[in-house]
Image (cartoon, rainbow, N blue to C red):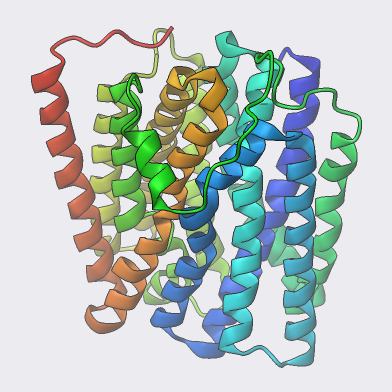
Length: 404
């Protein structure tokens, strides 16, 4: 935060992230109230994250090749289009299932375009020495937006009804204007940009992950992120209105509280990682934090009361930001400079694209066995696979040097 350009970027990016979360809060609530369908909520997660699954590596190649500022501005335009469209559908009462699917895909497209570009811009601004701190602060920003999003979204719904999402479009404007003045493009540490682009398809992903000389710690972090995302990911967030309903909420207040609890825990965890001495990202630390997070998510559906559920989500948020920020730091620092965008894109495919699976494991499966049991079973799978990765790491590398 001592870096002037990063401080300004942090502030404007936070405003844009709040806008994203306002859209999620209002759209998920209206979808739940309109259709009362766990399957649709699960499909909302699937359709939102499919673009990350299919196009993250290609968008990483674009970030390697082109001005990352322009890619972020394009993504902000798509986010604004989605919010405006939601608002018009809500105001006219014409929302249908296929509308929701299309708009979630548009929002997902905006996210996948910006993902690698944001990470390369931050790397460009702060440099490798301060990158772990910047990644933690970015995570803090993301979860702080999740914390503030329910408050802003709830306020807009109270004042303007569901159509208040139209006003949300204005929150996407400041970051786009700020990027016009930012001098960083995401490519300062490279003498020249790669001339080719990635191919669209699984072949490019396999070539990257099997590339000779690619640090094995990157592969482990990709596996860890993919496991957590596929089985739990963000699938439980789309079902949060249902969890809140089970705690006696019919007005949306406890729904907002549960979302805020997870975000508050993440912000607290990120700040603790920032200020606690001697905390450095390692593979083992990331795996352990992911296992603890999975354990807490398995316990959440069985919480006997609302206060207990909130407490569990606070702790889960802290461990979630710990393992994700460590994994991203390792991937970004260990990636070859000329391929950083592609490797970051591959990591995004795993930790974000595979969240589409959580729409199935929690939402679609939950329609048959209940969303509480589906979340518990999915989280248990995360714990078991994390423990297996921990054993494999212990056997192959007795002592691991942390990233400086």
